[in-house]
Length: 105
Image 1 (cartoon, rainbow, N blue to C red):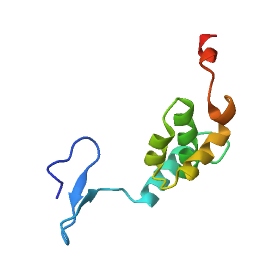
Image 2 (cartoon, one colour):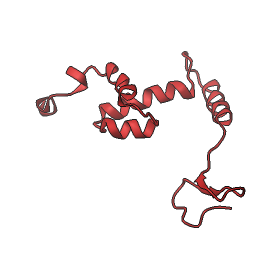
Image 3 (cartoon, rainbow, N blue to C red):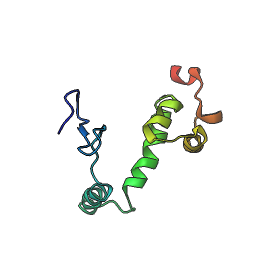
């Protein structure tokens, strides 16, 4: 039974056994199958997977200026150090920080 306070695309449901209200998730294998079918339908020469998309997502957010704590929360990392691993792919200066002057050119 959906929670009456649900808003937006994230649905919440009540556990009938204990009454807990939690977010409803699709199974991981279902998502992996959809991604595999989509990749197979393209001519992408390299392998692509849900895991590869996750690894691309974090640096993309960081490069666009998203706060590292926000990225940490989105990825579900408990330790900031785990999220900081993604900063190694940024080539825009020390620790991935761009100079404000770079935007002027």
